[in-house]
Image (cartoon, rainbow, N blue to C red; front, side, top):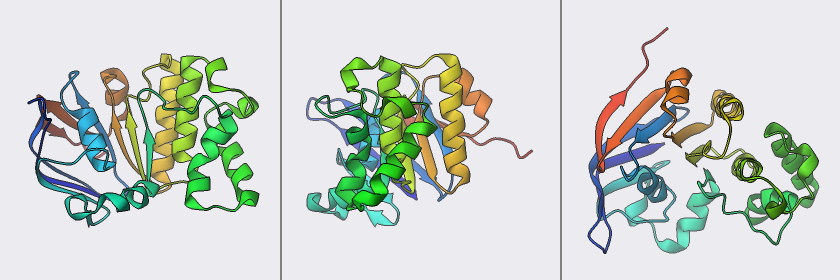
Length: 224
């Protein structure tokens, strides 16, 4: 599903975000990204989303070499990816329902199907009663859960999340990770950047550890 081969990313200001990074994530795998602030976790996710371009190396997603993929194809690449951003990126002039429905509208789903899918996604994140609310009327944690619903509403084959529990209390964080596991068990590939080491260890999944843009550990759980 994802392959990085000796990937480096250097920004114009000279910041070396990633250096010679190589790993593979198979279809249907569940994996966490951890590391200190500035270790390169968000940059890695942005490369997968084609929001950034690698300076060197090969980034492949679902067999497609993103370095050889024209920018005009980026929307098609992103249609196969659900992305949960650290800062929500909700549209404040649209209701919760319309925010969650947006990926389905872009993908060309029939209006008859959109309502059912949106309500199912909101129910999964515990916001079934908030579909007509405005984002700014919600708490930070509720806004984050709207972002989760938007990412999963179309059941994409790949789910990326950048610190998805940053605005949630421990109980809701564990429930959200449980939802990610449920989606993974239904075939979705999941890659989550998280600094919550307690929850990461509790989940017992593969962990990629970054430090200063380099992969310093690849921890695979022991078979039970």
